Image (tube, rainbow, N blue to C red; front, side, top):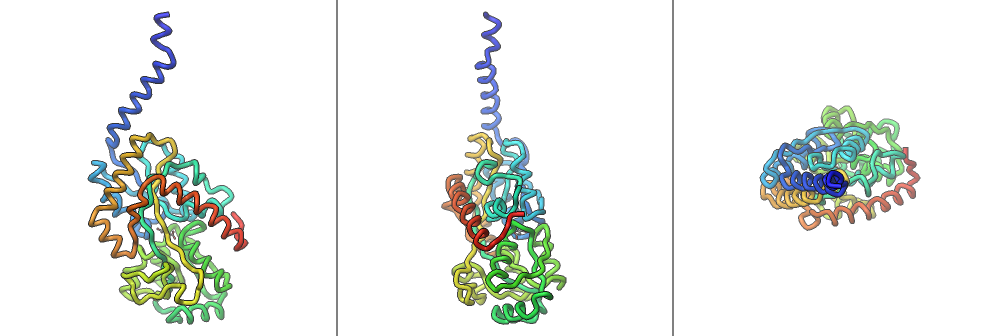
Length: 325
Ligand code: ASP
């Protein structure tokens, strides 16, 4: 009797829960990994590295960015979905989190059940750009040129499920041109090839394109936000350019694997919110044309966003006749 009481399952479970709670209370005791599912030096990486720095004071541990590009972001996203739910594996991903599940038969994760959301981070407009010597000086000329030279024009993107692929597809569908697309592991290498004049056009986030547009090393035609971006005031919106319903913002969010203990996610939410309020972070994001989503930096807002976006894009792709691969 005495013996069996000592080892009762309830007591063992209780002891395990206490150990778990103690670990969660101490969290974090070592550096945290933040997966960016695209190449280093690109738009998502730019946001992630600024955010990692801004979250450090609250966490008291460094946040190390790991770039895991490929398959439009689904490889890195899946890596975090399968990671240990202990708060040491974060995912910084964007709108592609909710488009990829409709574009792949098996994206590797379920947007509703594989993750615990932490919060929204930033919203970033996209810009349609071309190599600096591309023979079109405004969007009207761009459309005319593409229509006349469909077989010659190449479109770079970061693979199926990436923001650049979403925007590029919206654009080519709108003008009825099915272009040769060149996929990369992120838009950092795509931009390199654009600067090297190896590819012709790219639709990429202002968090990567602003510096090149300002320096004149690429040609820029339009921005995909509803309003013009204050950092690029001369760039017309797609809607001003005659693309009536063309509006897309690349929202970014932070997730951890499902099953991460509540004390850990609470700490991450606080670190995210404090990070977004950091003046250096805000200044950097503003300079890159990004809007910081302070009031949506919480799990409920991100869960709501995903629940709304997944069916919306699924519907759009179906209507556009895009089949999952
Ligand atoms: N945002 C991605 C990157 O950081 C590319 C993309 O989504 O198009 O490279």
